[in-house]
Length: 182
Image (cartoon, rainbow, N blue to C red; front, side):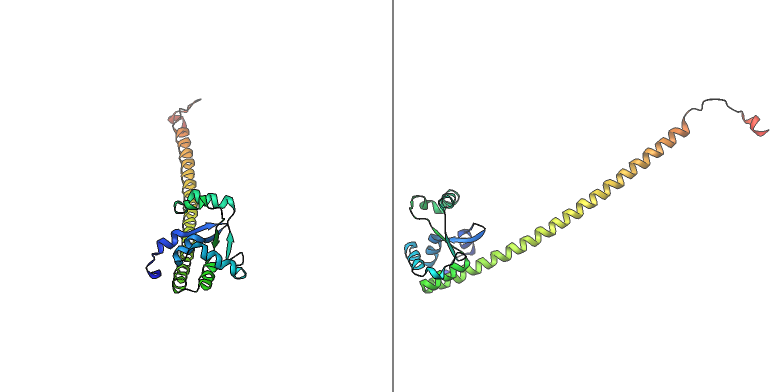
């Protein structure tokens, strides 16, 4: 079964909480084919295997926000328990303590998806960086073009002034061309 789980289903169950990519206990239990209660029992029995960067419990506010934003987690609204969430380290450790073939295969699949997501994020950052660089260059080019236009306007204004100066009517004493030749 675990090999048939599409990446999109796993990706939709990965959440960003406290700056960490995590999976909530009920989603993880569903993928591992065990009840959430059993998963959490095994975690409590092996709590030393789950430091804070492997797993943490949500606060009430985080739980309420999760219920409000994730349709598939609406049932959590009526639960009196605060759910646990697992980082990719905790997901692998949970598979180890459950020790079932499905949990092990599924955890491998989930870790592969985490790695793909990380690679996509790195690629996304590289693309954003290149776009920002192009935008900066474009802005620099725009500024240079605007400067050229400003110089052209100034040049045109000077030429216009010279033309007006040359074509303005002369005032004052005019010497005839005959007097100039003498």
